[in-house]
Length: 191
Image (cartoon, rainbow, N blue to C red; front, top):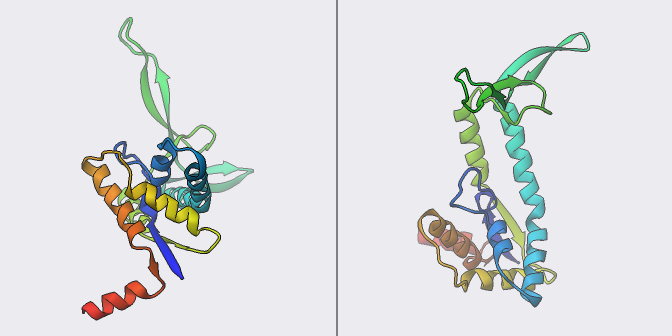
């Protein structure tokens, strides 16, 4: 059975403004007819993984977040510390208000987690982003995958810098659609 292997990192951009996700790039393409429908079906095919990546990111943020004990229903409960911005009046006359970062344990107010171990979070999440999504190419999805492959490999769009490297990774993933075990046999014979 043929398989398409995509790294989780293809589906998560984080704070990179210059590197967009595969799904964002596909969504920006001006398409019509059957290829547009194939793109939409492909996006639905990977949608579950996109949600999983975001949930994993949030779970890891909570794991590595600073904790604070608070009273809840008369009991001490440990909660994640979150940060938010609040406007504060400047001491200088006619100066615009400034933003001050404040802490809370209320997730309705907090906008991001305060990390107690930023390095630990980064290392674990980066390792997760290197994991792969393997999609079996079945008669029910093969046309969709191959049309998206053709669109990616034959795009007229120009790429530069980090985005050029990411585009190359996407191309390699689609060019390397392989039979199960096929790639492993090649690697063993090269040793």
